[in-house]
Image 1 (spheres, rainbow, N blue to C red):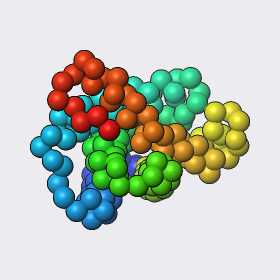
Image 2 (image 1 turned 45 degrees about the vertical axis):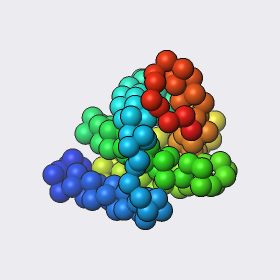
Image 3 (image 1 turned 90 degrees about the vertical axis):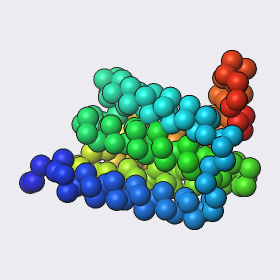
Image 4 (image 1 turned 90 degrees about the horizontal axis):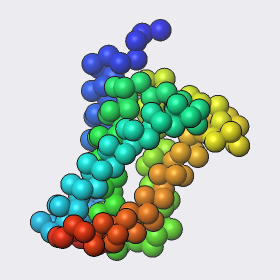
Length: 169
């Protein structure tokens, strides 16, 4: 089997992410407003760092499969760091929270399966030792990602008390 982290496969994943950003852009139709940019940057940086660290700690706790560093960095910084805040702003105030939840779950499923196909990752055979099978492992973590549009507004309201200029969703 060929090594999974070749430049070609990394470029394929980046092209895949770009395709998803294009879909999100078509949903949003306008760029981020100037007032939204500080909030976007806060969500991007904090989300990327939190995901990178959490993925490793969850692996150490036996709750996630190991995401090799190239995959973890791409997933955390490009998808979670850039994609999730962009998707959040695309959907915020336009759709009920249930629809937002489902869209985040669906996008997350698509990304996890693409990374699995390209890099042979996301291979754990259980979700939190409760649901068995790789499908439930990926679906479980995608469902956790679906909580993003539910948790972020609460987090922004809390952080907004201390950081002026944020768009409080």
